[in-house]
Amino acid sequence: MAQGNTLWTALLVSLSLMLVEGTNPGIVGRITGKGLDYARQEGVAVLQRELARVKLPNFSGSFEALVLGNIEYRFHSLKIESFQLLSSTIAPVPSVGLKVSVTNAFAEVSGEWQWKNWMASDHGSFDVKIKGLSISVGLKLGNDSAGRLTADSSACSTHISNVQVHIDGTWSWLYNLFDSQVESALREAMEDQVCKVVSSSVSSRLEPYLQTLPVTAKIDKVSGIDYSLVGPPVATSDSLDLDLKGEFFSLAHRSAAPFPPPALPVPEDHDRMLYFGISSYLFNTAGYVYYQAGALTYDLTDNMIPKESKLRLNTSSFGSLVPQIEKLYPSMLMKLVVSPSSPPSLAVAPEGLSLAPTVDLQAFAILPNSSLAPLFLLDVSTTISATAAVESNKIVGSLKIGRLELSLKHSDVGPFSVKLMQVMVNYFAANILLPQINERLAQGFPLPLPDDLQLSNTVLQPHQNFLYFGTDVHYG
Ligand SMILES: *[C@@H]1O[C@H](CO)[C@@H](O)[C@H](O)[C@H]1NC(C)=O
Ligand SMILES: *[C@@H]1O[C@H](CO)[C@@H](O)[C@H](O)[C@H]1NC(C)=O
Ligand SMILES: *[C@@H]1O[C@H](CO)[C@@H](O)[C@H](O)[C@H]1NC(C)=O
Ligand SMILES: *[C@@H]1O[C@H](CO)[C@@H](O)[C@H](O)[C@H]1NC(C)=O
Image (spheres, rainbow, N blue to C red):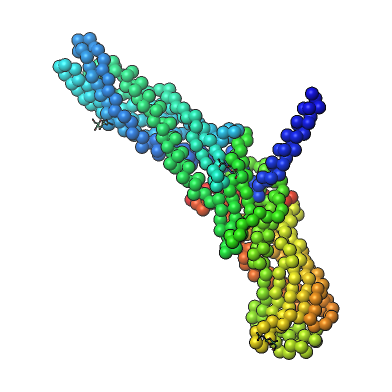
C-alpha cells in the first residue's frame, strides 16, 4: 500500500513537472497589494458614479388607520442626491480572483409622496439618509481562448444597517405610521439595485476595457509579440499573478521556437504596484525570428562611411593590406555582407546582459557592371555587452561591442593573415554596423500595458535568466 502510494506520488509529481515545463511563461506579471489598491480606487470611483445614477422605483401601499380608514400612499420621483463609497478594501481570493468590499457607504435620496383616503389627500416631499451600506462582491478572473483577461462579478451581497426617512408635512403623526413601510421598501429597492449596478458595471465597463488590452503587438514588418495569458490569473494571499506567453513570433510564418522557455520565478518584491519577470526566452525568440527572416543581415557600403574617414570600403584601401585585392580589382568600391551564422542568443545574468554571436563577414568587390565578385569570407566572433532600460512603456536596448576574433573561412584572393584586417573590421563594426543595430534597439518593444498607463518609479535589474522590472502606474 505504502509502495503504491509512493508510485502514485512519483507519477503525479512527474506529470505536474511535465505540465509546468510545457507552459513556462515568457513573462510573469505580479500585481501587488499596492497595485490592487490602486485598481480598487479607480474601480470604486467608477462604481460610485454609476450608483449615483441608479433609478429607484416608485412604490405604494395601503394601511388601516383609526378614524381615517383605509389610507393609500405612493412614493415617486425618487432621486439619489449623493452616493459616497468612502471606505473599501480589495483582497485576492485564491481560486476566485478578487473580493471587493465596501463598508459604511452613505446615500441620500429625495422624492415625492402622496396619500389619499375616502375623504382627504395630501402630498409633499421627503428625504432619506441611508447609512452603513455595505457591499461585498467577488470578481472571478479568468482568460478567454485568445488569452485575454476576463472578469465576472460573483457572489454580490448588500446590506443596509440604517435608513432614516424624513417626511415634510403638517400631518406628521400620520407619517410616523408608514415610516417603517417606507423604510423597508427603500431598503429593499436599494439592496436590489446595488448588486445590479455592480454586475452591470463589471460587464459593461470592466469587461470591455479588458477586451481592449492588447494580447499581441506588432513590432515591425517582421515580428509581433504575444502577450496572451497562458492560464487564468492566480490569486495568492497578497497579490495577483499572471503568466503570459511572452514570445516574439514571425508575422509571415508563425512557428514554435526550437527551444523551451526556462522556469521563471515570480518576482517577490511588493513596494511597487507592478512587477514583471521577463525571461531570456522572450529575447531569444526575437533573435530566432529575426534570424529566420534574414533580417539580421547587414550590407555595409562605402557611402555609409563618414567622408572624413581615411579607411574606405574600396579595393585600394584593402589593397594596402592584401595587395592581391587591388591587383585583381583595381579602383573598385567594395561591399561587406554581415550575417550571424546562428540565431543570436542573449544571456541574462545578475552581472549583466551579453551576447556571444558568431557572424560571417563576406567581402565583395563591386564590378563596373554592378555585379559582385567575392573576395573573402571571415568568421568573426565577439562578446557584446547589452544594456536595457525602460522608456515610456517600452523596453529599449543598446549594445557595446567587445574585441573581435577573426578567422579566414575562405579566400578568393589567395591566403593572407587576418591579423591585418583586425583594425579595419573593428572600425567598420563599431562605427557603421553597431550604430545601425542600436538605432533599431532604441525603438524598443512595448511592455504588455495599456497605452493610457503612465509609469513611474521604475526599476530594471538583470537576474539569472530574466530581467526583473518593477513600476508604479497611474492612469493619465
Ligand atoms: C413613477 O411616478 C412618476 C410620477 O407619478 C411617473 O411619472 C413615473 O412614470 C413612475 N414610474 C414608473 C416606473 O412607474
Ligand atoms: C485559457 O488559456 C489557456 C491557454 O491558452 C487555454 O488552454 C484555455 O482554454 C483558456 N481558457 C478559456 C476559458 O478559454
Ligand atoms: C579608395 O580609398 C582611398 C583612400 O583609402 C581613396 O584615396 C580613393 O580615392 C578611393 N577610391 C575609390 C575608387 O573610391
Ligand atoms: C559583369 O562583368 C563581369 C566581368 O567583367 C562578368 O564576368 C559578368 O558576367 C558581368 N555580369 C553581368 C550581369 O553582366
